[in-house]
Image 1: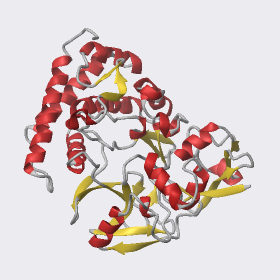
Image 2: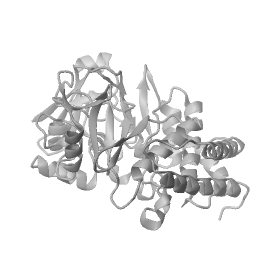
Image 3: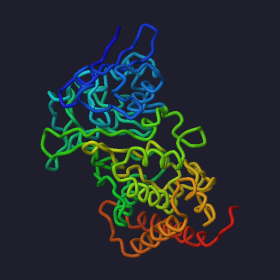
Image 4: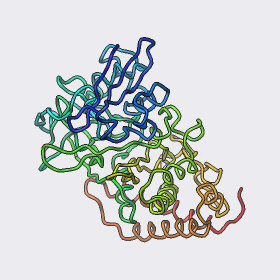
Length: 410
């Protein structure tokens, strides 16, 4: 039997097992079952052992997707579908609080020069997550090339032997100019209107700029950051990353509202944030706002929505990216024409009074227009780029307000 220990702050919480039939199992330790907490809401510890599809779904969502996972698997001589085999190499610093395969408390950091950072980023297509470096064990979800690092006092370090990263470097997306500047601006706009978001800044490297995003699942600024328990909505629903989009059978806003009501410490607050997030994504034209872009973070004995992340105006690039939203609003996924009637259906879906939803959408759009009219020039964003982006978002936001007055559901 193959088994990977799973640790929380140096204490063994469970084991991830690859059984003789090639299926994944999770078995809690007796001590953790008595005194710990659930690794996932889909893997409650009152069952000492889990043997179903939910085990694979939870851990599969810790890995990158598509070609990045294929490259990672090739690097370690295994199959992209071999979740156990990949996690054995990259599981010590994943999203959330748990370290897989090692305690994650005894690692160290290697200082990086600007040139070394650039070199690691350039090699990501061949060596995702710095997998070409010795003693690294890093993993991040998603389909975009990223590099987890540790940032302290203006310097960057490569985590080794399970040390925790505290930031993520995101490369420009091939074929989509100024994606770094686009995401940074959208994060700043969201925070300016009161949405909790991850902090970010642009790092201008010699060959191209990268977006540095502070991890919300890490706490502390010294060389011993604390890992915080979290899981995205696909993990909570035991769905693989293959079906993160509603059109593929993935979570809808109704499903998100059910999770919030069931697990949030502050469901009314988090439902309001969900509405605001939906409205903001519509305003900026983020058609890729799927369920893996919403997470809950554990706080004490409960959970609440984590700060929002991966906010990008995809409609800025015209037809080169999806024209339909990842999650429909009132049964419609065309992101340009969402009438007040559709928002009323959305209100029914999430069981919130229609008047409250319409008011929240209106306030979000009005606040965004106000911020767009006075936002200062952001560092490392060319003036023309910022002008084009803000103009695009302003036009969309005005359209959102105009369509709120339409009661029909075209």
